[in-house]
Image (cartoon, rainbow, N blue to C red; front, side):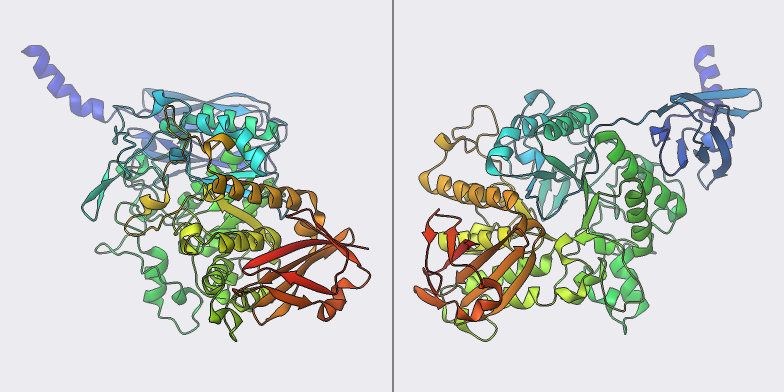
Length: 623
């Protein structure tokens, strides 16, 4: 009884004992272009300690404390003379001394931050739904969501980075040059109820520890191994970043450093999801605030990037990720909801360390002006973005609208059919460099492309031809090449189904030609042929674009440079058409023949081209 009484007396004292349980970033490097780093120190009463660091070439320039006594922020300067080693972070208070080891590493020479360009074809997949290389990591009893069940479309299915590594040969065979996975960072979130259905955060957009890759995907080691194997095979890796929000069980939400760490409201306020108040010169300030600072959903708290500690945390994590894992490009989720001056600062920091890295964000907008606002542009906005690229929602919408009218009377209308794509591209003058935009025709948030075009195989091929031959960096959603279909209504899970053959025991293996139907193999080969041609032909990844006004449903454009000229001629009508080429003399002078890239056929007379219904010819012109 006396022992229990003594323990009861000691517990309040023990709870006030100082300790360090976490340091972020978890390590840093010598030889970085920017020699400063801000350490977030967390632990019981860690903010009440007085800190010192004694290490050659490392200077503690400032210590900051905040509302929560469990936090301290240490500003370090790492000089050019610093050597790799273990730094001791020493905190003292009275008779208490706490020491925490922190590693300063040498940079390696492994490939990293290579960027993506028009020479690439990006393949987007959700790792949980792509391939399961290690069934042993499908679920963990100590995580908030300990379940995995492939029979339930809303739960985790067990796909992982080991499975992705095992399918690198598939990417290569298809002609993919870069792979983008939805976020791989830990999402230790409980199931959430949406519309009465319990759902897992298998998509990855609710981070709970920035410096940990989700165990269910294999963890940090598996991610490093995957990137190394991808690079060895000549593939690039795109990391999906989230700055706007985190999961509501993120460790620092559970012990908030300060109230201003998040965008807080008197009562819960959701973003309006409206783009217009950001660029509208007449907008009310409250509408701008709701768009930017309202929460995306109740279980994804909105980070306040105007808080300098939050900004430093996010910027340093971005640099740490590139340096640690060696990723090549940076896709940013929900770009338009972020504080834009912060985004400029973060982009600049990444580009300063890695000049070749490509950054492209998601701003799901419906107008050219709004899309241009979030990238380097030529419009006289009060704010000027420095983002090099972005996801091209405008071209996606134009392509899908055009394709839905292919084969109908609207295809020959004033604004119908291919006119829609022509008109979207005709406004490229608003961008500093439209070739840095990432083009696509479906993704993990949209209806699958095949379903959007009514499962019409001609329209399917026509759309892919446009995607793989027009300007921009093409991105394709997993399974499009094997005719996966579905609408997101009633749920997103319908467009995020498992890739057949990615799990041991699957009845069908669509990763192999033998496991695909004849039509699926035809689709796969169609993509493979165009992807291979795009990769090998400079005009498609470094050439200019010249397009001609569509007439009578016929749309013609050229990609050209000093090395060659490619002509793409599309017939959006439901009948074969003869296309006289005299109108295109500006780009065809000197060429007397052509090779049909898709069929291999040689055309020896270019005066009039015969275009089958709902088809595009891709012609390599020759003298």
